[in-house]
Length: 188
Image 1 (cartoon, helix red, strand yellow):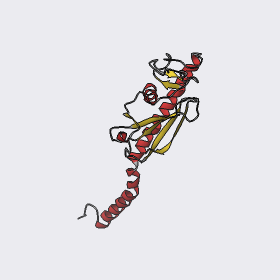
Image 2 (cartoon, helix red, strand yellow; image 1 turned 90 degrees about the vertical axis):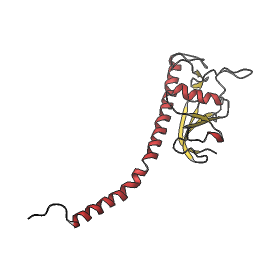
Image 3 (tube, rainbow, N blue to C red; image 1 turned 135 degrees about the vertical axis):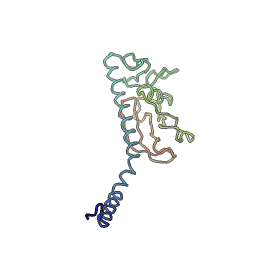
């Protein structure tokens, strides 16, 4: 009579092989969540940059000189431009000695995000209270005059790690030139 099934040696060999595979594959699978967050951040920031370029192309095609209020050929037609033709925000008219299209305010950064992207991200102004699991992006701005090379909005993707002082993906948008940069940054 022939025995059917596995021998003890075959069973031990299979268990050892499965153990080796799990030890080598486990670290890779543990990083999948972070890889997914990195991909979301990069894809979103790339979409923002593409939208900036589309907006600027629309501004060029409209033959508009300088600042344009409510550029109609882009999106819902509610985005205003800088004097150089890049998106600045909604209702960017200024008062006093400021020239329309030359002043960046903190509220413009959120208007830019929602005016250029159609997404479900929860944005919050950069403050201590913003570092919560409910928020995906923390934003604010640096400088005011868009003709200054330092003037930019920054957007930090904190959905993967909302703790204050952690390194996250950051995008900076310079409305005077339309430049978009992406890198790692730590917000305090």
